[in-house]
Every structure is written in C-alpha cells, then in structure tokens.
Image: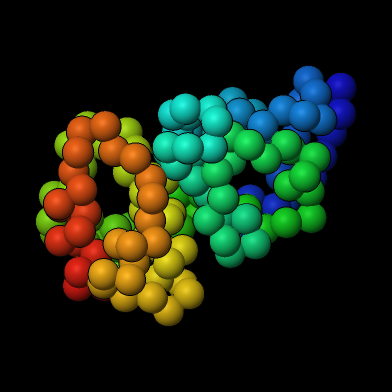
Length: 146
C-alpha cells in the first residue's frame, strides 16, 4: 500500500492508503479523521468538499492523494481553530446554516475569495457552492459585510 507525506493544516502527516488514486477527500476524512470536509456529489459540482490547496479553494473529491503531495492543504479545521476567521464570525452572526452540511465547503470558498482581497458582492459572485437548504440569502447577507 502506498504511503505519502501530506502537509495538512500546517503539519506534515504520514498517510498510508489503499491506492495512489484515492481522492484527497477520503484521505482527509477516513485516514486523518478531519471530518469537517464533507462528501456531497463526488463529481466536483457541489463544493461541500472544498479545501485550500496552496491557498486556492479546490474540490477535494477530485484530487488524487498522490497529486496533493508537496502542497499545502488547509481544511475547515485549519482555517481558524478558534473560529475567529471573519467569515466564521459572519456565519454565526447571521445564523447562516440550516442543516449545515455544505457550510464548511462554503466557508472555505468564501475565505478563499477573501484571501484574494475580495469583498462583499464580489465574494458572493465568486462562490458557486450548492446549498440544498437554500440559505443563499443568509450567505449573501453574511458576505455583504466582509
């Protein structure tokens, strides 16, 4: 079984997986126990599995573990361990989540847009994650002040 060293949330992590083609999503969840990253569609559409790879939002369901070697990976757990990121604070202030399933991926996408220096409506126009509960108006309200 192949072994890899991944740089996740600021730490090097040694992982042994069944296949070099195993999606990063499953390595994060099942091997490393970082369950904040969610499985949604598995075909890179919904965004529930969004993490940062080298500072850019990427859908982890479609990245092979072997492709992630040598890159900096940040999950929702590493975005702000004390939940002090401005996007996380806005989510709480505006009570964005309903079921909450898509929210970690949504937050990673929003925080990624913020990291590029984008604000408000510009962030909202960039984030194309899906929310089955339809909390889009609350998301729009939350990002308006960012």
